[in-house]
Image 1 (spheres, helix red, strand yellow):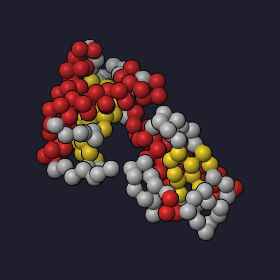
Image 2 (spheres, helix red, strand yellow):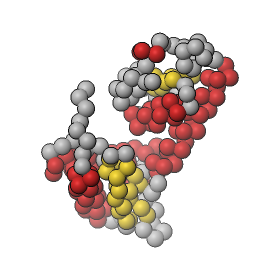
Image 3 (cartoon, one colour):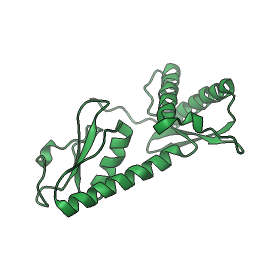
Image 4 (cartoon, one colour):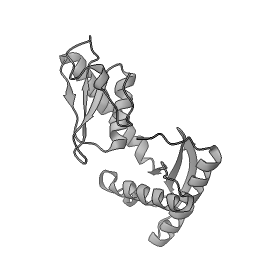
Length: 184
């Protein structure tokens, strides 16, 4: 997999503007009220739809985030159609991703605690690539190892101790995270 060139702040802002225009039109058609906030985080454009007044826009999140995930994919396609470049835009609705990241962080920390207590690896439930990436990042920060296994949509993460700390599943040279980067 080839690495893409980092985009300039101007390009990232352009992607966010295109996404905002697309989402504003979509909100108008769906008759939803909401403010759209734009930003850049980790070299990615971020677009947030925030509830306007007391209007509930949780229907744009859906069960387990399926609707917001679909909206993100559609928005990325709209951006790609205008720019000719694949977008890595992040779409959030009413703080859903922040809450999801916190739940995933807690899940990863619980798995790490179990691994440290038992010395045994822990398999987590199947997750999408965003969820796996959050878990891999937390595990790495905590000094443990993780690896993704399986095929979509049943791809899951296994958490285990570093070599020398306890029994491990693989030797360190085999560990690769969801971004295709060899783990440290």
